Image 1 (cartoon, rainbow, N blue to C red):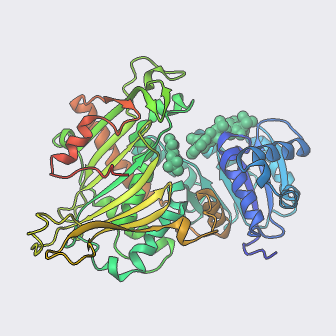
Image 2 (image 1 turned 90 degrees about the horizontal axis):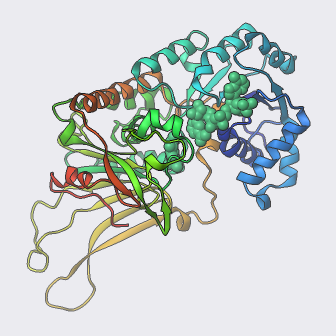
Image 3 (image 1 turned 180 degrees about the vertical axis):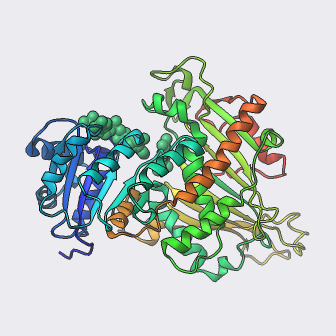
Length: 491
Ligand SMILES: NC(=O)C1=CN([C@@H]2O[C@H](COP(=O)(O)OP(=O)(O)OC[C@H]3O[C@@H](n4cnc5c(N)ncnc54)[C@H](OP(=O)(O)O)[C@@H]3O)[C@@H](O)[C@H]2O)C=CC1
Ligand SMILES: O=C1O[C@H](COP(=O)(O)O)[C@@H](O)[C@H](O)[C@H]1O
């Protein structure tokens, strides 16, 4: 077995919570399995329960069985991982209790310390202070922050300012799990390793771009968090804007944090503001009602467990966005995301401009445009829709739209697609920041999102109901149809 990462002590704050159990502990297991944890790396779980190390290990094992799969948890790998596990139970808001952690870490507190905060963000400042008072923040310490990083620009600034009192920006790793998805990373490969695309990637050749993140799930017992957030803050502010930034950015000089982030920030700064003047034409808010997802009957948002009867929170958003720069002049980006939609599907559709002149008009009035479809999930892959001649000896050329389909499953047979959190944990442990979000990115994104929210408030724009299992409110179809285009729902 080779250990390819630097040795560190990894502290998982909130180690018994939902995120840790479902995603982070399974990710650590997969890194162990792949031999990617340094032989001497230790993992410290922190939560409130006063349990001993043995009980903690039993709980971690139970989570792996539940979320990795019983038959997939290899005992040898588990034994190796269990050797690394330690537990510290204390109340995170009690600064004096951080000595428990410091005592447990000694005498190895000279090593890089990676602290992952899978806790409510209200605790971020206290955890930083607790670490600082115990002198656990050396220049090579890192801190990984989970979302949500605020609910608007002001609250996000407060969190960032608090954390910045203790950690330099180069030590702060803000998670957006979309940046860890293989297919999102493949966007970089597709754009910057293929001249066939890089040369066409602008208003000269592209007519418009669609980004869809459709989910079948509802709020899944997260009402109290979700009702304060809504789909605009929960999905657009972070994931959709990060994807948009990667699609739209100029080629970075290098594949490092400084270069990639600098280009993404330019895109986020160039987003045309949406205000009360254009919010009605350029956005749609929706809220799911009861309906069927597949053949399962599901309740409406207002009938979910814990729901407040008159909530006006949106569970669906469609936006027509513009990037006011040279490359993307007059190229609309249509964004759409919602819960309880017809399918789970995240994809990007790049629609190219039509040919300037149709020499096949005798057999085909209009040539459909080429489209590049990047399927982020499920069924990850890349598709190119293009015209071909139908084989045959007929007098006239018969053309047919055909698809060149590069499904990852088939192209990279037997290659396991790693979960986003595996990639992100690995990069944080290795000290690579390029897949994490810089403070300026978060703040520019919030600035744009706050503009939309304020415009909704000023115009009294309320969410329109849509049945669960559909593609959102009818007005989202109108939003794009108004420009003579349609959503790519042709799955
Ligand atoms: N769940 C998810 O899928 C996602 C969650 N997030 C974010 O990650 C964070 C954690 O979420 P989630 O795991 O769902 O939350 P949970 O409530 O399930 O877990 C929170 C964890 O933090 C610990 N904790 C909370 N308060 C204290 C405290 N005062 N002292 C010590 N430990 C404390 C809890 O310890 P104990 O068990 O002892 O109470 C628990 O281990 C949240 O900010 C959430 O928004 C982000 C993306 C997805
Ligand atoms: O961050 C979040 O993302 C999920 C969707 O993630 P995906 O990887 O399944 O596309 C979303 O359901 C959740 O509400 C949001 O907080």
